[in-house]
Length: 314
Image (cartoon, rainbow, N blue to C red; front, side, top):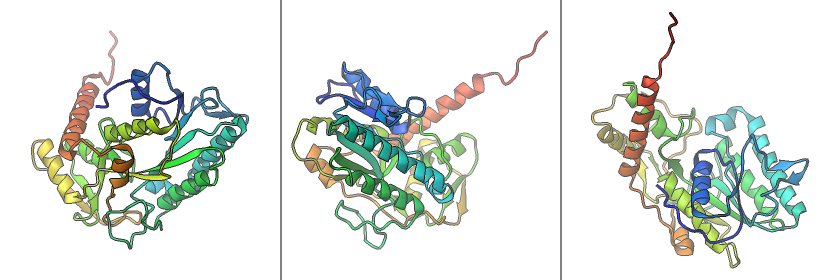
């Protein structure tokens, strides 16, 4: 878990504050700083009538964590891709009109934007050439942000495969919550494509710790425009399956499936820049993180089982 502590830096706004990453960051900010962050979500929009909402207009650092896309949605719902782009543009326009130039942190993708023909690990200097609708959508957001350097000090955090307790299974996204939910139900887990393909899994609390570290630099000084945020450790699907089997206390039945069009070949990130610039490296071992996820799944399943499904009246 992220430890609360006094945080340096100025006023903070979180867009996407109720999401998987945003809720962790908002909780850490609220616990560690008397200046409660301005929190925005679908119910509390950051922009109204073209004007930045209170809290956003005064922010010294803005975290844009409002991503609602998955690889499947990016392929099948171009309207949602455009809606996410429009939201980013509206926020940047509103900040420009407010006359401030805050640090603006965009959650990007480290697994979908780099050129697949280049051998990993991917550095920030690796050429970008997405080969999926999701990767194109993520890179387009980066381009929109960098076009507005007059309005903000832009930082893109290219995240690898983020996981952690409480992550909801979303179709086509986040293999671990799907596998653990199947395991708790006694169902086979579905493995798509080559089981030897590797990914870079990073715990959500480590990601939160990186986002907090960015606050130390908002008072001035140079900020890198792009930073990889991952474990830096390649883990194959078969290796992750071994960890899940060990954590759940037995062998896991597997259903092998063909690969999907949006699945990338092996990728993982070089995180040397995050270390050099911010003294950050992922600290939570994958087996430890998966165990915490499994314990949360068991707790949730136990609570669900204790709720009556019907009420009889006499």
